[in-house]
Image (tube, rainbow, N blue to C red; front, side):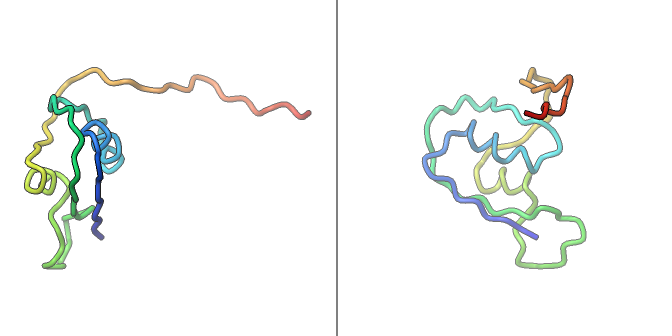
Length: 92
């Protein structure tokens, strides 16, 4: 299975926020790019076992080949949302 996303007037931070849902960890924008960009990204969700010769590359390779950006593992602070407690609403 593969996907193609078209971005119009997108900031790199917006792109990273959307694409991190397909990654296995949080993504942090360290590019320093502040402009808005139009681009398309085609990638395969799971390269392993894919026999379709016309399929695009996996997401990491696609980002590097098609956008010229490289995803690298780093240790960096990230914002997280923690839910400490959940209660059922009372009946009115």
